[in-house]
Length: 273
Length: 290
Image (tube, rainbow over all chains, first blue to last red; front, side, top):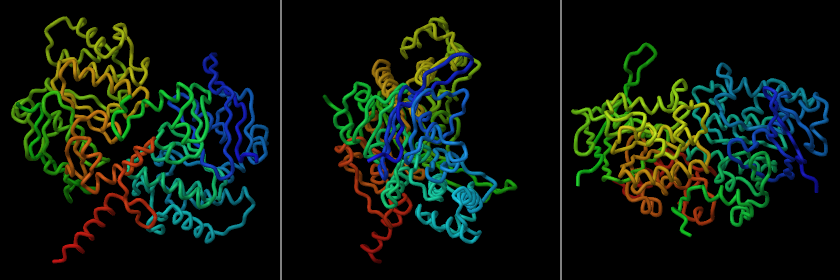
């Protein structure tokens, strides 16, 4: 079976002030249809560059993609004409961003922002939906993300919502156009631990109920264990280890992965060896 | 033995003002909080945003005065006598707490000058950098040349400059990667033992709290809802809020997952703290009808 998303031998470098840095070195990863995959790494490991390359958001220059393919649904995104690429973004693949406040326009109500996004997504997909239909769809996704009082939230400005509610709005935004792949960039890291737990549970429930594929990008190993079945560990632009999440946590093969897991403080207290 | 830090029934209320500045209400940020830390002890304050943990830190530092109650450091009230040198603070984000226009040496010099350090200041800065395991020539570097972990080491060196007895650590590692965090925590533990320091450790990371603190206080809406030795509180949490917090921690092993309390779902969703409290109130009312 071929994967929904398959990154193959992706190599990316950045050139600034005449100096070139290899940022991704032959990165390969697969996200099968309906699978929950995590990409974990510390700052500077290249996980965000990988995500941006997949979404087509890498500024070129300074970035340059040397080699590799990004196959989505059998098509190579890197050779796709710009128009078709744009049509996929936000429709077949959607993104949930980390910081809700900078992803929401403060002077628009939630209803207006979501409706506008939906309008453009519909246009790209050639779907016909009137104002009323859009309004109904917005309330529908807000209900899907288990927002209490969706009507009131839809009429509100982002400022009056709590951090957890804003993160739910971002998830709703990503779900608007019924994507098949959800890419989540550290969702909930800016939130309190109890709110983060709610958001992670919501994401898990949603991808399971709707059969979505999830690519979770995070630095938090706990989040990896809670949200994924397969994990890719990244360090310095390379995938150092990958496999089923349970196996990687129980028996990491590479020294880097072992050190990373050993550095995480345990809820059970000191690990005595 | 006199405790290194004693907090007695402190209360701090902030006025809520409306658009034209008229007082329209009040919020109790810290509501009758008391705890003590023995010399050389590590006390952890855990709580989420708005729980009052930073307000408590600010009051201990003398940056805010409590409405009532008392704060004693080595048995001396800081409200009547300013003993600023005895307590120092390490902030959350070293990128923001270090002045970008000062070299590392200049930053560490500031408390030495402010507290009129009499000895050889240059030598003292070198010694402090040794203590936090940074090369001495780092004194001439600027913060932007350092990594996050190195910057936090500089912040620790600055806090130690005037030989305080008590350090307030406000989320000292939350901006760092886990491997860097592990090394900074090791450093803090070693320094604590060598110098006999007392720590007040403020964090929202419960796993880290379990490993670093000896005693923990769980703050919720300005009140300590549960306190005790870490092992006891973590293994047998009594208060609903502590149970919710522990249940929410993302963990990396089955043993840890088994340790987390089971929280009842409300409509298929994890309850918020308020929901859980309301649920408990309802249950209590049912069990003890008047």
